[in-house]
Length: 334
Image (cartoon, one colour):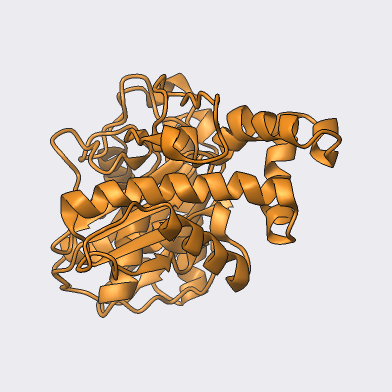
């Protein structure tokens, strides 16, 4: 039996999974290894290889039985895995600029390697869990983390685009002025755009824009006594526990997501919408509240479109590695 490995390479950690030809995953939960990406390509690729050996031992699989590797990383990068000339967002070492990470890992491991950006890999996993292998459905995934990632799956295939930037959903502009309760706010994204989805719907947006804005409306709130970045990390937990200001912040994020989903519905007419990322690594009650707020943020739609389901991304921590593994299974024709 030939297996595939999925490798999700982040700025500080690598997550692994191993899959059978039938798409059954042999590792439950996280299987992490330090990334060492800050030390550059040569050191990092060696660390990926070392971590893969650990994952294979955990799965009870011999390296000789691995047919292919699926890799995902943060972008920007081409569809073939060549990182931007300015380097990847989370890889600060100058050696990453213009580096062909797919080919580099392929040479290192001696196995065929396919590549997806991390948002597309997560989106592929969410789509697979809903519709299975060989599906012809269409789904849109928005993954809320430090930034806003995601992906578009059309007729079962990942939309990568001409240069690999397909599915850069965080930088889609939305009519944020229609969201109630943020009058006078100017949400600016780190990419320089004003009013794209990431400028409102991300941890960065909470720290830079939403938390400072709402602290003015809630004088004396306990989060005012700490730096914005530290306070931003506490907003989700406090919102889940019912804190009024933090709920307002997440309501704005959900409504922004609703506006974005409305745009996607009118472009793709998808079979499903999926929300993932750290923002929804919460209890079911808060997830349902957030989804209801996102749906409330969608403008009135045709009756035929109103029933599009909104799902929470399953296995959020391992979605990238599992999506990368699915792409590897497709590459080998499993």
